[in-house]
Image (cartoon, rainbow, N blue to C red; front, side):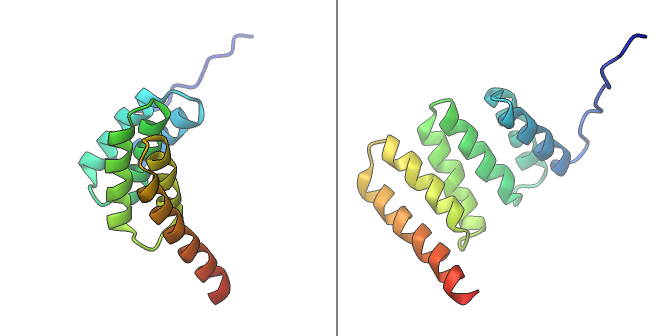
Amino acid sequence: MVFQRRQAEEPTDAAGFLERGNRYGRNGVYHRAIQDFTTAIEMDPDLVEAWYNRGCSWYEVGELENAIADLTRAIELAPTNGLYYGQRALVYHFNDQPELAEADQERCDELRFGAELDG
C-alpha cells in the first residue's frame, strides 16, 4: 500500500494564511511564516494576530526592529492585550532598550493582574 501525503490547498483568505503561517512558525520555518503573515496582513490589515505572530517570527530570526514595529502595530490594534506588551518587552530587552522593556513589562503586568482581579 502506498501512502500519499495529502496536498494542502493554497489558502484563499487572510485566516487561511494566518493558520498556515502559524503552522510554519510552530515548526521553526520562520521565513515562510513571515511570508504568510505578510500576505494575511495585505488581505486584512486589521488582523491583529497576523501582526503579533509576524512580530514574534521576526524576533526568532533576529530582526528586532521589524519585530518591534509589528508588535507595536498589534498593540495599536488591541491595546488591552497584555501578551503583546510582554512580547514587545522581551524584544526591547534583547534590543538593548531596557527602559522601554521595563515600561512594557509594567503595562503587561497591569493588564494581566487587573484582568485577574476583575475576574
